[in-house]
Image: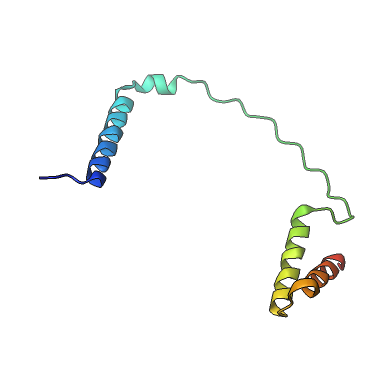
Length: 92
């Protein structure tokens, strides 16, 4: 009887997983629990307020994506599409 490579591979992976599970079961539970609890880290400083000049990358991305979708719905191509998107992004 010939065993396919896929069956042989899955058998090998299964044996490896079983060996790993048995190794974890052999570790005493006190060794896993002996680590001291992690000290609470200080809260992260608040992010600085975004400048009012519109340099927020996420807002720019959302605006450009909306403009690209509008250009696609109007079936603009080439230079007309580029000009439309630039004009759309420039307006607030």
